[in-house]
Length: 312
Image (cartoon, rainbow, N blue to C red; front, side, top):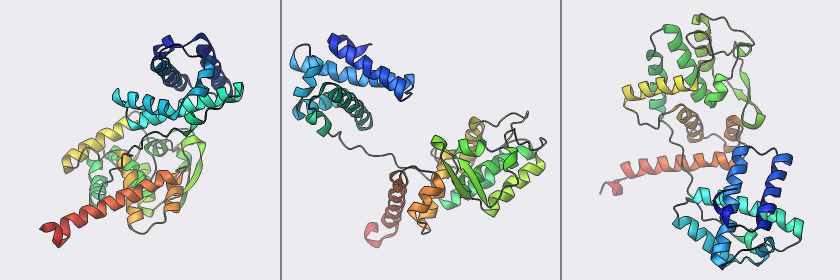
C-alpha cells in the first residue's frame, strides 16, 4: 500500500486490505479497480490523520463530521481534482466506510450524507445531417481499392444508420449476412438488443460483401482488413480523419460522433427517448437524456443566429 497508506494506523491498513480482498474475491474486481480504491480510501484516511493531528484507528470514522468531509473535498479540489474524479473518490470512501460500519457496528451518517460537487457532463458532439451524409459519401474514397472503400462506407453506415458502437459493428461475422430487418446486437455487459436495419445499411453491407475478395464465414469477422484479418478500429478512425480534413469538419467528427448523430437526429425528428435508449443499448435512461441537452443546445444556436433580437 502506497501514498496515503504511509500515514495509516495498523488497524486502518488491515481493515482496508481486508475490504480489498473481499472485493477481489466476491465481486471479481479488477486489479485496476482495486488500485484505484486503495489510492482513494488511503488518501482519505491519510487526510483525516493530518486533519486531526494524529494517527486514527478504524473507530475514528464514527467521529467524522460533515465538516470533516467538506474539508477533505475542499483539499482535493485545491489539489486540482476534478468533480468527476472527486465523485469517484467519495463513492470508494463510502463503500469502505459502509463495509466497516457493518463489520464493527458504528454510525457513519456524516460520511454517507456527504455529496460531491456537481460536475458538468461532456455533451456529445454530433455531426449535422448534411455533414453525416457527406462523411458517408467521402469515406469510401480514402483507400486505394474499391472493395475497401465499400467496406469503410458500410461500417460507417451501420454507425450512423443503426446507432451501433464501432466495437459492435466490427464484431459482426459472416453469419450476420445478408442483414435482416432486425439485427441482434450484444453490447456492453453482454446486454442484447434488437436494432432495426435501414435499407440503405443493408444495401451498403451487401455491396461490400459482393466486392470483398474474402467469402463470408460464420467464424470470421464480416469486415476484413486488406490481408483478410479483422478490421481494426484504428483504421476506421484514420479514414474518418482523412475524410474529415477533406470536408473541413472539426476534430470531433469521429466514429463515435456518428452514433451520437444517429441519436440526436432521431430525437430531433420526434423520436421517443425510451425507444432511443433501447436502440442505443443504454442501461440507464440518464445516459440517453444527455441527447435532450444536445438537441436543446442546437436549437439555442439556431435561435441565437436567426432571431431578429439576436441580430441586434
